[in-house]
Amino acid sequence: MSLNATFCPHCGEDVPESNESFCGECGASLSALMPDTACPNCAEPIQDTDIYCRHCRYFVSMNC
Ligand SMILES: [Zn+2]
Ligand SMILES: [Zn+2]
Image (tube, rainbow, N blue to C red; front, side):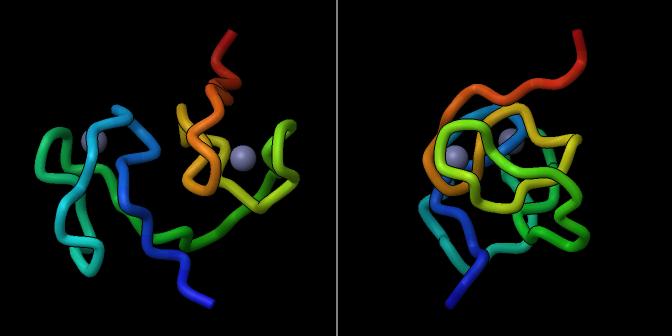
């Protein structure tokens, strides 16, 4: 099971190279280094810095 995203969990941009470690748009890490929360939509582990779920692209911004 790979945690590599096909889109950026920070800015939501598509990342064509799924083996890239960082988003080409905003430089955010595409690897879930320390998943510490769960997506409310798909329950997959995400980081609290993620704005979009890396698994289902659900908007999960916790910065409210
Ligand atoms: Zn990005
Ligand atoms: Zn999700």
